Length: 187
Image (cartoon, rainbow, N blue to C red; front, side, top):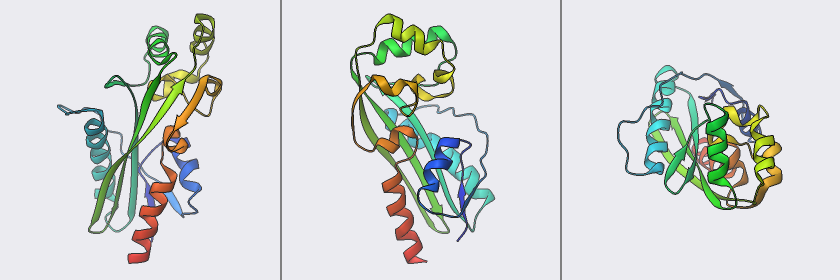
């Protein structure tokens, strides 16, 4: 069974490698616009379905895995910061409190299709304005939802994680592994 990862995220490729699957990457660049949604979970599911269907239409006989990760504070979705001011705003929102990281996953193989969302709660320590300025002056915040990567420089500000740590990095490894294992055993 061929496996296609529909994501250009290097981090997701690294995480999928942990599953010992023989896969290759092929993604479709889409505008991640969702006209209406009921809550952040619904938004993430709609985005990953768009990506997943576009990739699975190109690879109809292969197992397709796509994912999309968002950071949510008070039901507000934090995307990738567009500039330093936006990164500062996000860091101030995350500072000294908890937030949720949601990864929506799309898995399709032949007539099987599933979409699920894994939610992890992340607690951020109290950061000084100097720590925030130092962090947003680095390159790290600008290509990540919520303006941080848990595995990078920001890790020193993470007090606690409730749930799947790998989910915060972009792929709930255990849940994806168990779903794929069930599929492989069926076919």
